[in-house]
Image (cartoon, rainbow, N blue to C red; front, side, top):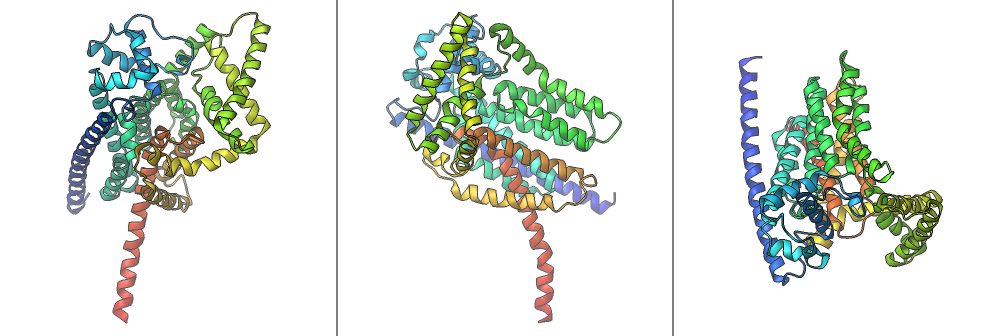
Length: 467
């Protein structure tokens, strides 16, 4: 390395450090201001709608935390059959640290749980600090990944600031739900995986698998991502330790989720990691598809599915000669939803396709009162540019960083979109899961636009000179 190259690398590294410091400072100011404004807005609501901090599902997680600290363990009946263990364990630690371990569960009824947690409990402040700390680290991961893919500090900083300026992201990080925890571990998995493939280090690969494991333990959405990561290892890992690399990643990513699956099967006889997928199909996705197909209200669609599920559950109970347990009950309801999808696949796919614009452009405004359609339009346009840049590469094995990054980021966006659409208005949490990866692709697209302009500038200047 020449002296000039070394000096340029030092300057580049110094500018990256300054960019990280400025980014974290902006994150701290923006998040502090958002929490204070949200708290004032909640106070004006006379303690009736503290929706910026808690949702209905928050009460369920809080009750699970109290079950843990009071010695009752994890329950196995709905909706607890949909929960995964990491977030209740985090809440349980906070409950014990705040001295709330003797709290009566009856005080946490859905109609008053939100107001109690915000206005009378010391719990919400440390949880808000934890959530926003993880949110800031997620933004930092966006910067680091985008910088690694582009080599441009400016483009990476712009992508990270796009994520930080989204009201969807700030609102989701404030709510006491596991999505911010899952999102942090998932993007940490992406960063460590990219470094592992580039550096051919098994240690980084084990860290990527462990991060994916923790993301799955926080929320079941990433459960089926490990085969995709394994396929990327098989395609792009170079060296004689290919089998060992795949084995290490799979062991780190699946050991604890498999143990939880076995625990559920031992308790209930239903070997499922979580019943969240069945519940999502039955309560949200299939009712929306049925509503659009038959042009009825959402409530009427729900009533039809509930009536069919009750008949199915009654038949199963007569066949078994006993009441169904929670997992079996959820399984039968999920089977009703799957039967609808098998009978009307086009209706379901059509509902999913129509749900994508709503997911990207409408959900923020209906929940936060601030629409970010302009931001989303810019992110999507730049993401298309990024995909076009990747698609121009002819030899994937000669530029492995570009190609495995394309497949990983594009696959993640597609996977998460399929899981989250269609959704009811106001489900901001689903959009927030997608935002970091769209911002990374947007940073890559912005860097490509800058390169195009830099290449065209000398041509334009020479043309003017000849004139």
